[in-house]
Length: 276
Length: 307
Image (tube, rainbow over all chains, first blue to last red; front, side, top):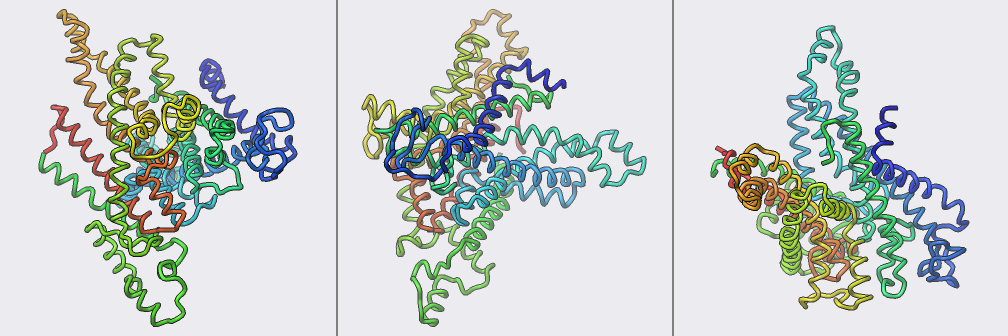
């Protein structure tokens, strides 16, 4: 309830939360209202500008842009959600165990994160989807592999600090097992940090997916994705600019809103994190 | 300093080794047999065995890895799968300077514009200027390179016809790509400059400088900026890496013959050695950048002494 009250006071974040919610709901609901599939071609109605019937117009194959943008949203949210969830779980588990137990587990894990953090993110994504092929599963795999190391680092640092706290010592003195301490005390105190980090990660992950799809090594046509739609609109930029502009605007709004939500969450949950 | 350098370089070695192992493993896991890709279907087993031996593919995996590593050390990334007979190193030598020039140019513009903007916003905190700068900083960080490119091409090339849509070789061709490429690094630099100046302005020595009657500009230039510069310089490394990876996307849009285009073409042609070379090269480059930034940090801040 306090979270809700704080959110109501923070107008920009509230607006961003509403925008993200609207985008998610629209991407789920809109395809039921347009009565066409994302890949239904109608070559007698190509390049129709926005108007009744096709509210956002049709593309070079007469496909309904509104439907495609909505499906693109579904795919973006599905991929980024799954990827962030995966890398959070991996990073949280790894970082917590490394930080709490220390020793060999810790040094091995830290050396592994060193290696993963050394790759420029875009290059690593290109390596995985370029070599293993651009399927949705590979894209999620690549995005998770990029994100987990940073999460593990942060969680580890937090766990390391927690280990020194008196309540952990007290729990151990009372005879609590390592397992109980990790689950009941360490995890409970680290979850916030992981949540903050995860909420900050969603925007960049959507951006990465869009970049890959734009380059042609992410989502493959005819499946729509905002990145794919922008790339497909580029050749027609002179004559039918709305083809590229509509998905560009939607993508930018989504990333901007998610960035605000992430920073808002950080501010709300983590007192150390202040927007300056 | 020399000992610190040796220490840091030694610390980088296991990372480089790990990176090459992952790149090598990804190449092995990739679908398709190099012999088949390079020579097509060979029906004669003896010929196939010879081709395999020639590429070293008949050796155990660890041996192959060491050979791969040995090649990397000599800047030998093998032969392109898509253009047999052409060395990957030759393709890189053609494309890399273009990308580096583009990225560096964008960084220079980003620093020249971003640092003053950040200082301006910090000195006029909570003013209209500050709000405008912060809004555009946020936009610069959130809006993807290719969306900016779409907008700029639409306005400046197609509507106003001031600049060419795409191409390479003419000074006019450079303008839009550099503008697209500099926005994101500039946003980061402006943001960090503003924050670090604001932080420094709260320090006691600034109040002392003001109290002894030093002119406002002198306080900013001599005390605030020189101390904030330490933080700013470290961001420049991050900004440069942003510009270099951003160049990948920008080159595709504007048809610039750099590493980005070479890499995406390689992916479509399943030209694995090129992809591997690009990933190893850029990772090494970014590690080096990190090291340089740390050294700059040590050189700028007299409080930090690495022994």
